[in-house]
Length: 440
Image 1 (tube, rainbow, N blue to C red):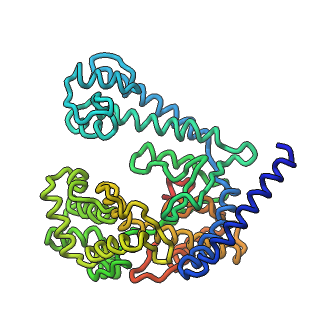
Image 2 (image 1 turned 90 degrees about the vertical axis):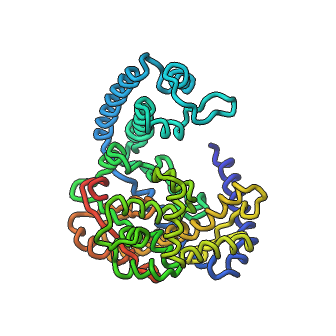
Image 3 (image 1 turned 120 degrees about the vertical axis):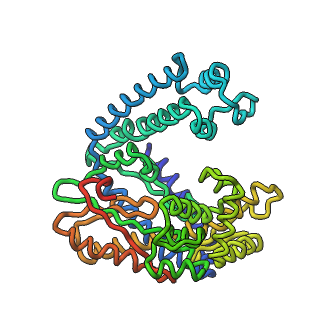
């Protein structure tokens, strides 16, 4: 691009930003919470992100290529199984052909229809049919592997910088309304960890010779924020005692001693704990646990009876959101809810669910940014060679020379836990490994 054209663009960009600043900055200064978020969180975070993006993450392309080959072989095997289950060969990526196999040849039940009136074969339909029929499960497994292969094992090696041998993601600060960072080119925050194949992708994110990867993750951060914001005594005391909060919740809901809680009861309690944070209804809980709606409603009622502060927080938050049009994080970040007064029931209900969750997700986003700032300041102050290389939701990932490993292990949890004083303790889980998977 000619320098004169680039200069005109850059100068116009700067001038428009200056005019916006003159209008908006006085409004930020007038609100202590917004001023704190801007001055003490977002501006310092921008500098940390710049350094993280420049550092990049070392990637072992050979590991990814090997995994890609293995995924391809497994996809071929699933394709063969799909043909056997269908009694014929077909294109596993064609909704039309899948529909013909499902509903004309195999006579599977129609769960829902598309806008054009044809039986749907989307992921929700496949999940429901997979409970009773083998072919939908095979297709779901095939799609999951195909996504891993195309998005990560095939694509990541092509995104490695030839000069550094690393991938250099971009972190966007001003995309998610909750303040969460968004990673792109490549997206390092969406690598699945619930499946063995997804977790293996992390094996390719490696430490250079003489270094280790260190992963530090806030433990159950949104539940801790819920305890702090709601002030519920039961939840607050469970965290203060260092209890397994899912086991404690199960004991309350099922009326048993914590020591007698079964693994199934704890799993139910975990789904309820996290589900209610996201405003999950009885219908949603029933679908998630595979139980009757009346049973799910009963569990929710028992939960709120044991944790009345949580119920009061949710009701008060909905009312505040309707009145002022926004909710706030603990630090004063404002999260606007355009649909909170919508005449459309589903849109309004979605906004109410967001009103309950946004303060927790937004506070978690603020905390991890404060942690990044604190860690970077400490690294600079101590003149360490360690460096931050990734931020993924509630997790910080560092590349640490072996000679600094013990120091970092000792100080990192203290630094992250000390960025804010909540009514419940912040806890940090730390792992170390030759690659990201080992560390996490």
